[in-house]
Length: 354
Image (cartoon, rainbow, N blue to C red; front, side, top):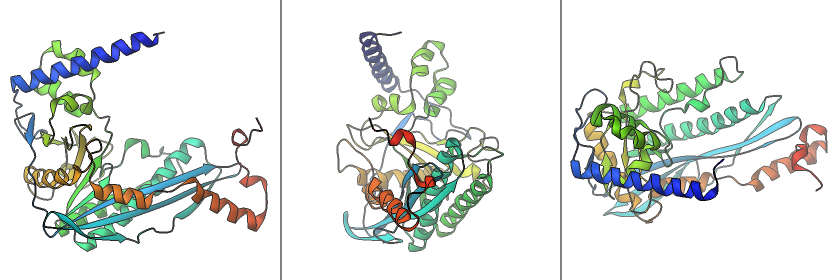
């Protein structure tokens, strides 16, 4: 077992290795051979800055709060799309769908295990977000930003024998509807992943650029954002790469007709925050689409020097957020109608008298 001092020393050593490695990469100016997976030769590029005039930027986020009880599980969800109109570089007007603060939807689930409870609650939130995003496309924004990726996460996929597998298929159908509508309306569609744990950028470096085992030790310790924090300067983005190395076999995208049209890159929006990952749907030339997305996301994400996220997503988050008070209101309403039956008792660990 490590003591605290050895852990601290290890962290300091690893961070210094990352910093020096990133410095080496910038000074050496490695080039990557572009192909079907990677679309650019340079490791990083400067982001453009779009003129924010008569541009509508939409952001979608969802809220979720849940509680396990003795006989049932209660889940509250809602989602909001914020639409910001910019004129002459400034916010001119705002609109919200379906409303500024929509009433949360209540779901009660019976007799499911804890793992299915986690999966089902996440799917309920995703469904609300996708439906609101599809609705927001009718407002013809120039760009629609989702909180998180624009593809489902592997953790959200139920087991094959789960009672929620059909529901998951409905969610996949909603993703497909979102993609098709964005393509039809020529709306830029991107997902902002705040805290990516992906290692795709590092794997590409290892396999395609450096090809030298002396770098394996440091690359094996790095997540993408862990390295890119030191590699990218404010206003720079990484090269653009296909989301999946093999879209036909990737569990996140293989079921979509648009599986070959999903790409990613990283962007450093402010000096004191980690880079964000941006997953996007290609609706034309992927290089040009990525440049357009970057040129809009970057200048709108510099308001706070330590939190470089587009304000339209921050606003959607604040409108969609749910609190313990919301679920308490639901519990009180149930209690007032049917009394203190065992099904709505809190779990024993929540009501210990000591």
